[in-house]
Every structure is written in C-alpha cells, then in structure tokens.
Image (cartoon, rainbow, N blue to C red; front, side, top):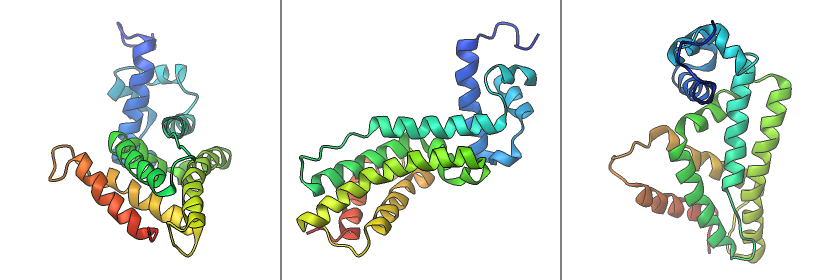
Amino acid sequence: MARTQGSRAEITGPLLRETARRLFARQGYAAVSMRQIAAAVGVQAGALYAYTPDKQALLFDLLESHMQDLLAAWQDDPAQPALQRLERFVRFHIGFSIDHPDAVFLSYMELRNLSPENFARIAELRGRYEAALQAILHDGQAAGSMRFQDLRLATLALIAMLTGVANWYREGGRLDRDRIGDIYWGLAQGAVGAQ
C-alpha cells in the first residue's frame, strides 16, 4: 500500500506540492530528500511518484506554476500613463511577493538546480514578466516621464528591489502592506528618475 490509510489524491497532491515548496525554501533543494517530503506529507516515499516522476520534476513544477500564476495575475493597461502603470506594477509585485514568499525564494535561489531544459523554460517565463515591466519603462522614457541610462538594467534592478520584500516582510511587523507599497513606490520613482 503506497498511501497512508485514509489519504486521498485530491488532498495529497496539493499537500505534496506545498510541503515540498516549504522544505525546499527552508532547507534548500539539495538538502531535501523525497523521503523527507513523504514523511512530512504522511505517505510512504513510493507514493510520491504517483504525483511526480522525480525531485527535479517537482522543483520544475513548483517554479513553472509560480511563474504562470504571476503572469496570469498581472494585468497592464497600456492606455494609461506610464507612471500610473509603473505604480500598479510596483504595488502588484510587492503584494504578490508578500503572499508567496516561499515560491518567490525558490524562483530566485533554486534556478541553479534545474536541468538545462527546465531552466530554459523558466527563463522564458521570467523573460515574459520582465518584458512587461520593460514595456512600461520604455513607454515612460519615450514620454519623458522617466529618465534612466539603461532600459534592461533598470528593469532588472527594479524587479530585484521589489522581490526583496519577500525575504524580510512579516505580517504584523512595523509597517503594513500599504505603507510598504508607498515606500517602495517612492523608491521606484527615484530609481527611474520619475518626472
């Protein structure tokens, strides 16, 4: 018998993913075994393979689903002024990062553990998200509402700055989400030379 008596696939699959995400984020992908994940889920190790072919596939699935969720959640309105679009992006990215800290951490820290094919797929998805911000910055620079030296570098620097919130934010801390959004928006305006 592979599953613990009473376990169900519709519960075990999501629990496996959440448990793996948490363990990979806390201990590192290389340090976590499938046996540890199985024990934390409450199933025998062999049962995991009904949900994923191997640990590499599990990591890839976690990273890919995170990027797909991020891309699906972001909506831009190119008809709006670039600064307004940038503010929406900043507040969106901060909120998404705060709500998904383990997924964000994995997306940055565990890329090195992906196979070349899996890395290429995640890089393509990340590139699409980066392109969304880059389009906003391009439009702002073209309109004269933003000034910076290098479009690509400005894009990557902003994303890195915004993503950092997932590393330190704790619910109930000194600053609430709205105030953090306000402060990061001010930082972002400075970073792009907002006019």
